Image (cartoon, rainbow, N blue to C red; front, side, top):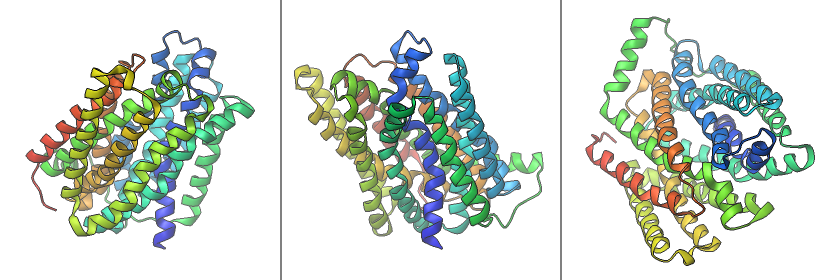
Length: 389
């Protein structure tokens, strides 16, 4: 049961990564087809999806607490498929962004409720261990998604990528509908007073909100990377159709970290792993930034990949643990807690990541220099956040 559950949760959570990363190879073609003049604006195809995800979690979290995890996931998948249909038929960039926002709103359902399902069944370090295994399965999707998106685009055109989204979501919909029982066995009747009380508990818990902010700052660097990765690999390093390969190398570094985390978290604990990983991330990125700033000619593909593998390995040690740390005190409020944590971290990441992504200037420096700044912010918040695990 546990293995099937892990694969299902990984499938549901990976829809977010698939909906993001499969679009990356198509961004130049979308910009040309829809008349986008400023190249950096095409990044909004990615970030509008993420913004929709952040906002959608505020609805789906309470929905899954009061109505159930299963209905929340099924409704979200249906909305996601509707948004994919809007983007498929879009004749303007504004309509494309509207469809992407709708997809993001929909994917918030499986993203939020699936994490709450894990919290329904597991807690503490065991929850962090399960989330690490989920991440291990999940990471195959972002590693392969750009290649899939590129191949679909080459054979059937960029609009067909949205058809693949619909098919992927339909598989998840059928599996959830017929293969998974409801995990929220203590659902409450809806009331605004109860909702307000639950939200107050989440917002006033210093551990939960502290690690939600850490998750947001950590994710912001990843948003900058996702926004500018296609431009960096194609315009700076001229990798052409090999872009999905190099993107996969970076993504698999996160997966490797998640596998290691599943073993280490039971012995060392989440706080130690997060702190050490962030410290390493700051160190790698600061060193790279100084070298590139002083010696611009040192910038090359293999140097960038080396930085990326070490830094994203550190990021992989942070992802699952900070969410588990934020969720740990919540218990019966798991649904709305997952919603608020997800919304706060995602909206914060997009608010910081979009302007940083638009700073892309034909070098890797704006991207890499963002990581030590954001990492130091994370470490500062951790020092100020009370510990209970």
